Length: 144
Image 1: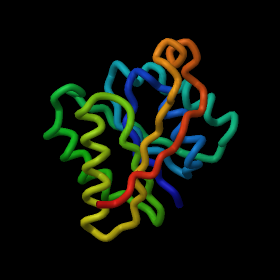
Image 2: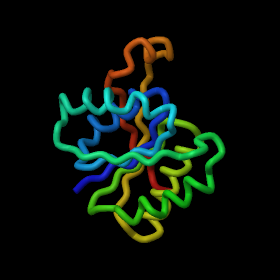
Image 3: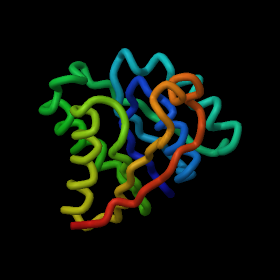
Image 4: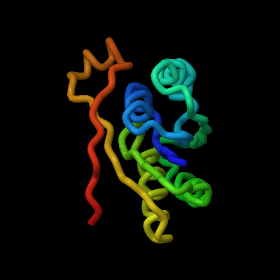
């Protein structure tokens, strides 16, 4: 089973792209109360092309400075890892991204399989806002 761990910010096209480019069985979304408003529309759009995935959301109370909260959450999330784990580092605030990165670090430390990626959209910001649900690129991040 493939699990995608990903932050979700206000630019929800990243989540859409991450799902379509990795085709996970389960999506673990780290987000904020503000960003979650676009979640269901984004998942519905992704399900049009990739219908077979479950999802779960985890909301940081303080998405701007909740690093301690995010790292505690990362320990919980890493415990639910599967045989194939993909961690996307792009999306949301720095605290949300730090939570995702922490998941990858914990998995690596525990010798569990983890693929680190960045989902990017090379279009200009105005175009991204005008048409957010356009599949971007998946870049594999090399191990150190």
